[in-house]
Length: 168
Image (cartoon, rainbow, N blue to C red; front, side, top):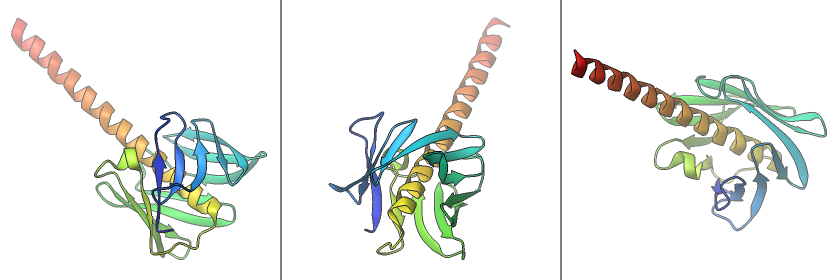
């Protein structure tokens, strides 16, 4: 498998696909996921990170702001990764040794497709693939919300200025 992508046919319950499918690696909602037959409870706080638990034990944990951080440590079981914002909208995923294992981008429908591309044929465990794909998608969504809020705030500010100028 060289990459994973998301089938968003059901918007509130996207499926994680091996490449473009049809193999389904996991099914996700906002609060839970089913990965490899295991039920994960998901908790996302864009300003502080994300946690997936299975039977009360942490399976995946991202420990930095998904919306603002340039480096996001991710722990999956005993393994550690770091999502690094290289520049602009492009991210790489490094393992504990600092080796690049994957990449993703916000460009070209990045949030809708949320493709996590691996360095060649991946040998990562299925839990790691699903965990990294989930966290990368949450990072892209958090960044998109931040950009949207900034744009709305700017438009409101300019609208207020225009109204003031018209009545003065």
